[in-house]
Image (cartoon, rainbow, N blue to C red; front, side, top):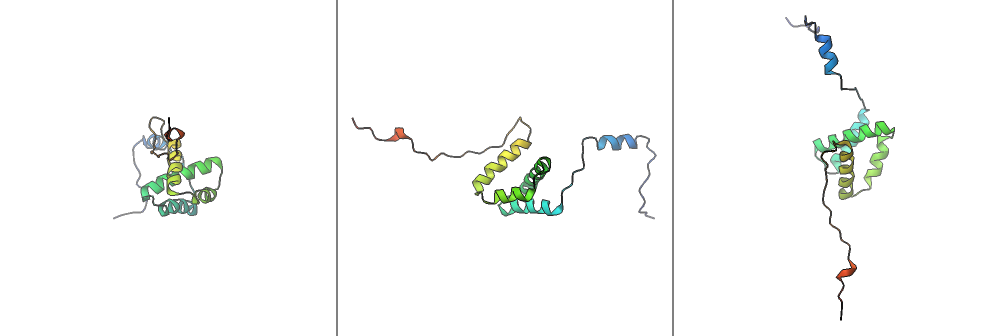
Amino acid sequence: MSSNLPVQSNDSADGTKKFFDQYFTEAISYPSNQVDAVIGFFENKGFEKLAARSTATVILQQAKIDNVNVFEIIDTLKGLTKIQLSEIVAEILNYDRNKVSTLGFRSTSVSEKLERRNIVE
């Protein structure tokens, strides 16, 4: 016979276990339309599902901390090229990462140097 009632335990340490299991967790909630919009934005820009979720999580957390509307952030990012967006995302993720390691990428410079001109003697 099954029941929908919670199972009661006789373990005297249940309260302590529950306290320490939730010690470093803080319940954070975001409106579903914001979560879907940010994840959808990054998926539409070519990010894989897991990468889109990870990036969206960091952006939503920072938007909440800074008290900024997440839709304003998305609007700002819309005009960027894929390379510019990758640079911004790398900076955002590095800001949120442990300082022991960082994400990066290499970009080539296309500037002409004056020293490359021909010198006639």
